[in-house]
Image (tube, rainbow, N blue to C red; front, side):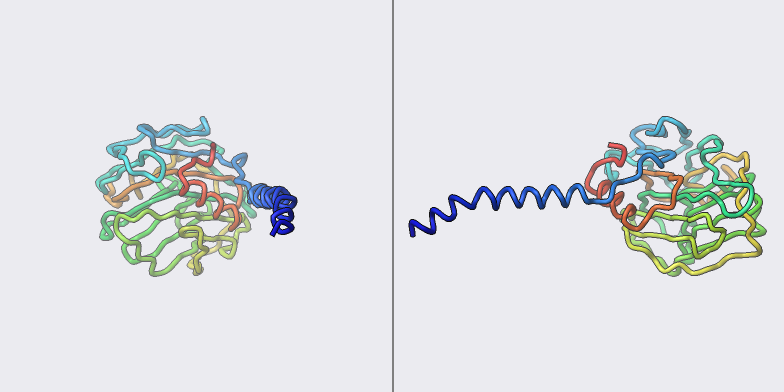
Length: 262
């Protein structure tokens, strides 16, 4: 018994030290979130300000409610509620042809009325660049427009996505800039979805239009009632194609109660 006790006393510090090294290694080896590529980020704490300090938005009709993923969220009642972000070249990914510049959209949303046609994030009025939305037919769609019109576009579509009413979801859409639908991905709660190709016409690259960015409404603004009825939180635009590991890291950090910028 004494020999066993002596063994434990001698080697316990080594075991504790080894565990600390293992834990430290696990933490340091986690995938870093590429915040250096975060163009804008909105947490909707009583305003439409950009946490990156670059592109503050103006909120129309919508309110801010408690119960967001972190703090408050942008509450939309489906009746011409939206946010406008003034045009800026950093919000476009035009390279003058194909390939385009890569980019990703990340956000948390919930839907309060599945009978509404809901658009969560859009650059779709007066000129067309890209769009992420969901409609009542059950399609979750990510679109990149060519030439600023609806004549030719890439569309990746998740079919028959039926969200539960008033449940938060983390959505991420990524595009590698290739000019091909195969470079588009959509994630729901950090899980990559099966994305079908619904490309129309011949895509020849995105154009840098002079339109504003709209969140929560389809357009034309503000007469179209096809707006999001529910909530939006932690909206980010990235100038890279986020990897699956980076999407998971963003989900885990935000879902854990910490902004990606902290």
